[in-house]
Amino acid sequence: MDSLRAAISETWDKQGKVGMTLVCGAFAGIGGLTANSVVPHFVASTAAQAILGGLIAGGAVLVGVAIFTLINQIIR
Image (cartoon, rainbow, N blue to C red; front, side):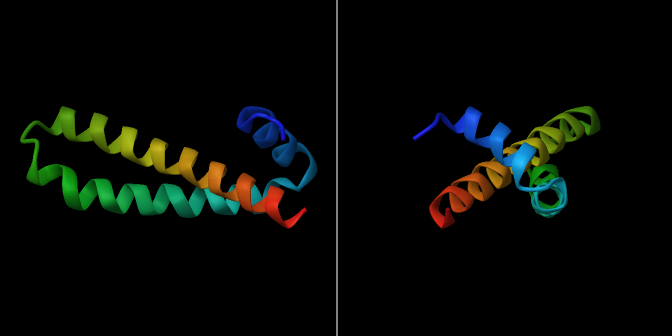
């Protein structure tokens, strides 16, 4: 089994960019909604909210790509 990094690169190249883009967009939306509803309760600074919101949304995209890649490997 390849490393996750190699598998993600292979999935992106071979499986079509549309599916991966949809997964990334969906998880970015989920991460953005989560960040906008959770972060303001913990942080008062707008700048800190923006930074934490970006980190949460970016992390959600990475999780989405990893899940898509693992499912794609299981199916193949």
